[in-house]
Length: 182
Image (tube, rainbow, N blue to C red):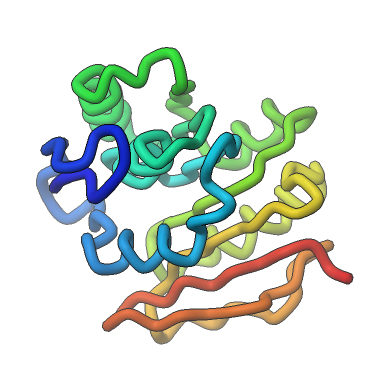
């Protein structure tokens, strides 16, 4: 896998071997950052269920001021650390080997401009994570939450204080975009 654009364009990064993770394909990452173009520079970015860290690293490469990476899998954390080191993004990164519920409570006094959630499909973790993000009010006023799901996964139009304002389908992946209501 490679970084698509920005300061580290073309940098090859490691992914996790096996079926426990499914890296977001280049086409979907490119589409995601096309949607987020104006929001990324200087953004505070949260990459939940981070896997290899490719999304957060891409965000830093494109100008995000900071990325927080969270995954419960120790193998993922090892790969994230290696990828961040290879990109030389240690100063812009924070890494948490925690369950998303514990992490969200731990960072409850922070605000993020972009929150990317790519949980295991069809388990309800994404909707639950957005409920917790709503409960702790972790999203900045004009921030965006992106929940990546499979095409057969139901995603409500409203979750807590957020509403879905757009969704984009890319093959079997759907990017569901949420913002603060009103």
